[in-house]
Image 1: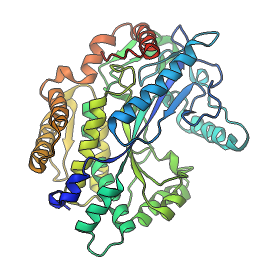
Image 2: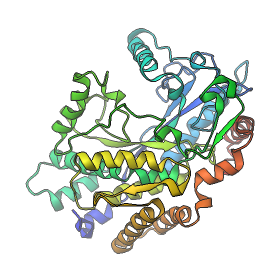
Image 3: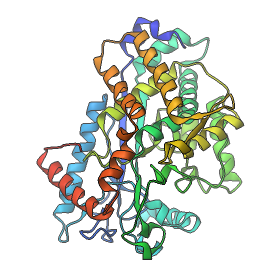
Length: 436
């Protein structure tokens, strides 16, 4: 696999793929409290709900380019904020992953589904009882990516070693999933964008008190979306992978597979279930560790999606290595550590049982990735520009999103957040989109 990029067919289809985004966000009133109005979009599949009734989840179509999916999300955002702006009591989309003012647990309205979807509300009541409601207000973005059939077939022809196309494809995604989990810490370090929270998240009497510079991404930190145990999954084949998840459900540690709070998921085409995944194979990989970025009206910066795409492709062509108990525990610990604000506290444990400062680990990874793209010589100047943007965050820590956002929103967090939400509403409706 490592030298497969020398194949002309592989190189021809290298940058092709399918791209999708799912963006969560909270509807809030003009005072910075959670909205308690019903979900205003009916059953439109592009405008779903997550845990909360006021937590809109935008779901894009699948596009064949980063440009396409970013524009698709922008279009959904425009429809969303325009609808909220036209309500009798105007509402806003909160631009941060961390919530605004919260009056307490009962202030978080569990999503209300009816009829055949009633089970979804029952499941959310279970989550509220087990984890509490407030943690579920943390919102983020999921990035979905599939390799193109052309690229998969070219790789299969080059590297199949007697495997069927379907088995080769599943094995390739399993290899990729392992690598992404191992390097989840890098994505969190480079893209965490939530360094400040309102004190009401912890207790109502701290309303208006800024809690800052502890975590760069609370939702990815030790106080965020994790199970009470570190899942150990089997990656040797798809059936074993699915079975290792089902074992946690059978033992009662999870109510269903969706309760597995993990940085990466492998998904099938169509119905998202473990049975369907085992039956039809992997269709795409989902990355779940991205904060909303308030520096963009869309919630994510286009060059970051481009970088994720390039990172996934790079990881595909790296040697397969052991990913057993130690490596999986190490990966989750590294991800939680990378969600801290203070760089001096972030140490990355390697598979060779060494601990190194995060900036040194990031420089090493980005240097190897950059050499890879120099070697394959693709005709795309955007690749090096995209990697250079990530180098800037490593070499100049003040340019990390967490640092920039704290400088702008570390004081009067909710008031400034409301001002930004109004500004972004105007931009999106007018089509004049500007990043901070």
